[in-house]
Amino acid sequence: MINGNIVRKEGKWKKTFVTFMMLLLFLSVSLILSSCAPEEKGGVWIKNGKRTNRKEVFRKLKNYSLALIVMSSRHTFLPGSPNAKATFALKNTGHTKLTIKEWRMNESSNLRIRYAPGTPEETKLLPVSKWKYSATYDPQERYASVHNPLTLNPVDNNALIEVPLSFVKEVKNAGKKQYFTIVAELNLTSVSAVSKPVLVTIK
Image (tube, rainbow, N blue to C red; front, side, top):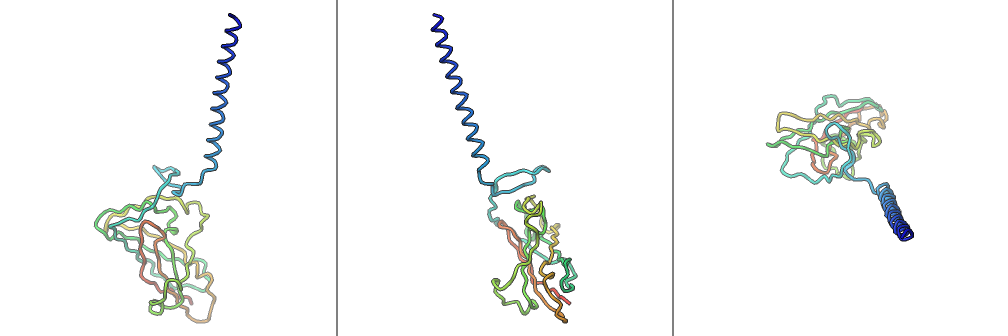
């Protein structure tokens, strides 16, 4: 009788040990898989004032109307100037409130600047493929990929975006005025807007 109890206890202990080992193996595999899983494409978000990771697909929005308007009045810079900037306003010209979930905290990363030598009249028929793009932000910057939804009410408010005109740093002194045309575009997939051509003078 004692031997039978010992055998039963031994069998019960073995089952418990096997169950424990299987659970340990499962947890180890789960940990390895989670550490090797690809990063979610949604990136980092700000939610209720806190940074959070979540997956998000930015589908193209419909039935909206946006205007990208140049606000800065100074468009004349010295050759090689490292501090050349331009300010644009993104305005909701529709009739309903618009929320852009894709908007980033780093304002300048929401815009792209393309440029070409010549006045707006001279570049009017220039194909987009002939334009160059001027860097507007550093991809390594802390908030470059942090999304913080932007809500624009119709007509009465807009978002101001200041961007560096990085290409000006590369312009050499030619001993005369040099003209460039710049165009701002939203650097987003869910909404689009393009500014009118803006003349930039280097002298």
